[in-house]
Length: 263
Image (cartoon, rainbow, N blue to C red; front, side):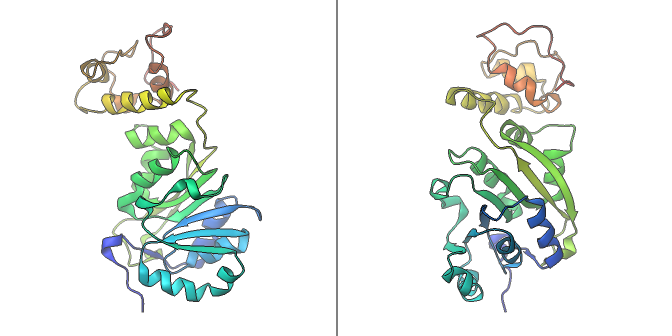
C-alpha cells in the first residue's frame, strides 16, 4: 500500500476519466514527447502513453519510483517511458528534447515555482497542461485582477481555464477543488532581447512591491519611469500590454495616456 507523503504535497489523481480528459485537453499527437512531473500512482501516465510515443516522467518519491518501474516495466523496456528519480527543483530542463509538452498533476506548494521555471527556461515547452489549485487557475486565466504570476504567464503564452476537478477525485482529498490550466503558444515573442525580458520582471516586481501604493509611486521609488500610467492606477489593474510598453519608456515616446483597463 502506497501512502501519500504530506512533505511532498502528494494528492494522487484516482479517476481514470479525468486523467483521460486531461490527456485529451493537452492536444497530444502520436509523435509528441511529454514530460510529466510526479506520476504518482500512474493514473495520468497510462492515459498519456495511449496517445504519445514517448513519456519522460520525473518522480521524487523513491518508493513510488520503484513501484512505477515494476508497473510500467513493459513500456520502459519498449523505450516509450523514461522514468527518472529526482526533485523537479534540481532538474535540468535543458536535457529535455526540443518541442516537448509538459503535462502534470503538480504539488500545490510548488505551482508558481514550476510554472516560472519552465516558462523562463531556455528550453521552453510547446505547451503546459497542469492540474493546479482552482483558485490559482482562476487568478491566472480568468480574474480581471493581475498578479505577478498571471503577468509572468501571459508574457510567454496564452493561459486558459479548462475545467474544474472536484477535490474528491484525489486521494487524499485536498481541502479545495483543483482545475486544469493550459498554457499554449509558449514563446519569447514579447522580448526581442534578453535585457528586455529581465527588465520586464524588474518592472513588474517593482510595481507590485507595495500593494497599498499606486503603481506610479512604486515604480518611481524603484527608480523606473512610470510613463503615462494613470495617477491612481494600481499594479493589479494594469494589463500585460502596459507593462510591455514600460520596457521601452525612455527609448521611445509613449503616445497618449495609458488606460489601465485596456489590453
